[in-house]
Image (tube, rainbow, N blue to C red; front, side):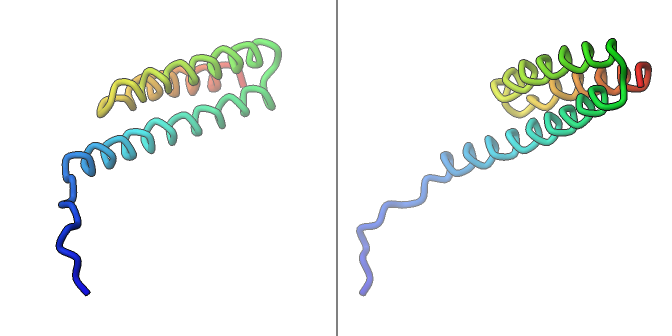
Length: 93
């Protein structure tokens, strides 16, 4: 039995949800990679690397929050922190 009273699909809300999911996926992936770099700093570095690891871990949380608020270009702040963490890992480990 067909019910003709179902509402039409809201395509604008669907597209906004999809864009939000894609943005969250980008920011989340970069944040996880940065956490792995911080773990490398903790495990293989000395005291200086551990301090940098904690600083970069805090910077990752802040940059991820900013990235989620920015929208489509939200991957840029966590990527900048990721690059800085990578340089620090190369120099200290």
